[in-house]
Length: 281
Image (cartoon, rainbow, N blue to C red; front, side, top):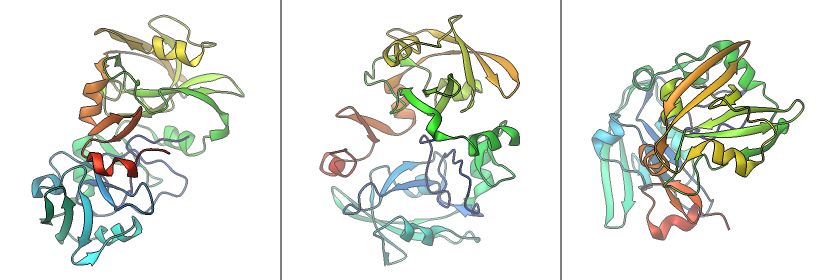
């Protein structure tokens, strides 16, 4: 399963949900930043800064282009592994903004403290997951066959109309057998309510969603006005009910430090002159 929301380089650990069969060894200390290198010809950017983390306290911002770390030039995400550390030693990070270069001394904090504030944990397989996600759920996600995904509703994880209200997650339409499941999740109402990626959706506001087309699903899972959503899902062998208020997509974008540009989702801080690095051709 492609879990794109929160997916970042784990050694830099922002607010990620990273599930993979070969999870990297979690770091002892992190600065709390998601770095992105969207195209080889573009610099490495700060995509997301975790609230309360050392990076935010030091002054790093979404959209910063990384110039160097401790004086060493940075050109790729592999270079960012210089931030991985088993000791809380600060690093000096130089960035480029529209008004010129800036340098910051950024501390590190224990990865477990970052995860605790976010309601996450490291599973026995080394993956970063919600604190209440069981190892059985993690194993199901890791072993998921992505070829089962036929289509998805909200494939960018957001409605293309930021004025709509929705739950903050993608809906995957599966085949062999046919099912609807919760896919990638943003930090939004559904995550706060306790919904998990991989939950099988049985009913939406009392309606069976199976057999609906993508556009019909997107209408079912969103609203033009403030509303609540009731979901009945199956988690492993147990059926559960969830109810939560829908959030305006514009607010979910803001919380997740993202912006909608030309019907595509970009980090919020990326300036117009750098947007070409993220926009698909």
